[in-house]
Amino acid sequence: AAFMSVSDFKREREGVATGGVLGRSALRRLFSSSLPGPGAFWDETLLLGFPETTTGGCLSVSLNRPRQLNALNVDMVTALHALLPRVEEDPRVSLLLLSGQGGRAFCAGGDIRQVAGAPRADVARLFGHEYALVFKTSKFKKPYVALWDGIVMGGGVGISIFASHRLCTETTLWAMPETGIGFFPDVGAAFFLSRLKAAPGVGFLLGLVGKRLRAADLLATGLATHFVPRAHLAELKEKLEKVNGFLSPEAARAEVDRIVDEFSEPLFSSSSPSSSSPSSSSSPSSSSPSSSSLCNLTADVLDGCEKYFSVLPESFQALLASLDEGAASGCRFAAEVKQTLRDKCPLSCAVWLALFRQAEARKCVDERSDDAPFYAQREEEGDRLLEVLRQDFVLAEAFGHGYPENFKEGVRAVLVDKDNRPQWTPSNNADVHEDDVSRMLNYCEANGLDRYLHS
Image (cartoon, rainbow, N blue to C red; front, side):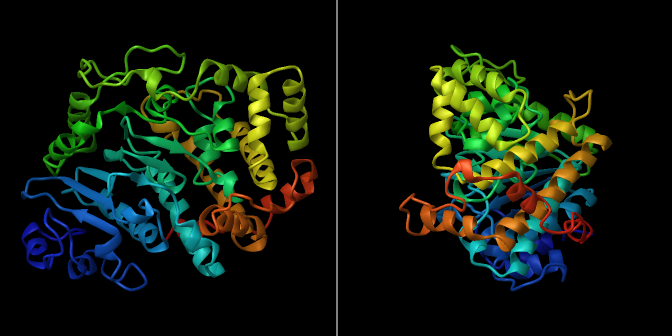
């Protein structure tokens, strides 16, 4: 069996912590020799909670690097990648619950400071296991609940975007900010951001400038499935952890739906077109915030996205020319995007345009499906997600190793010296050429990700 018995687990957890946290020897038995590296990280960066009863079927996984906002390092990603198939295969586990420790963040993304200074093999291992994990979560058949409380960015989005239940709160702050650190929106972002339930062009904007979203935005775009007030999360989690084991995926899904609907609330008093309600008939509590207070996608932003980004030009220079023309004619949206782009890495933005256009071209004609998040469980769309992730791996190698000057400079400016004055290469948007983009897109073989998919 993939998981040890509750009695064995209780004997071997070594008193690391209360609440069913696995100790080092228990985790070594759980994973055997499938994961490389030292074992010390098991009970430091990932907390795996077993049910308190023999009938419980919830496996609770909590990211445990609160001082780093639960940023993912290579050991965490490798462990999660190895864990997922075991969860799917073990009949005792009916659902997976993923959360973050510390109260400030679900997950702020990958540990980019660690990645920027790592050898090429470690960079490849981190991104390889991370992207393979993203793909496998898209095929995961059991209920998967992600508690998006606090900061949710980058890799934190990737490992949870295909969860069956993505729960946001009034503290959720969601973004794909990679163009600001000399990288690119990865983890399949071009796939899921090109398939949003929103005004055309919104997904492109999110990756281009790293615009931050709040709860109402996430519900309106379909990025989140439910809004749950933060005060209710502990009780919600307690009920989920009591879901029985040995349930079929269908029965488990019905039970999780029932519990989540019990605690989810709609956002009322909407004054913007981006407000939306989760699929819940529950009445709002007295403390339920309005959608307008949790909304960054205003009517002006939605209109601007549709005008400038619904049909994207082939080149980055053409995109810049369109924004220049709009700003000159008095369009506030175009002027604000143009101003924001001055702080972003020009090459990263140009690569994002090419990546997003590729993903849009691969979309199915019939792209709507309420049964599978972002349609990835349908075979043809799963193939398209895999194509995007393979391209992401090529670009991660290019930005992280082949041409790392922008990534290293972004990490220096944002995280090390914190002067927020990166010196990009090239330094100006006007100096980025299509040959530069092509060089990044074709840096290495397109099948480099495949060995991690089968590991």
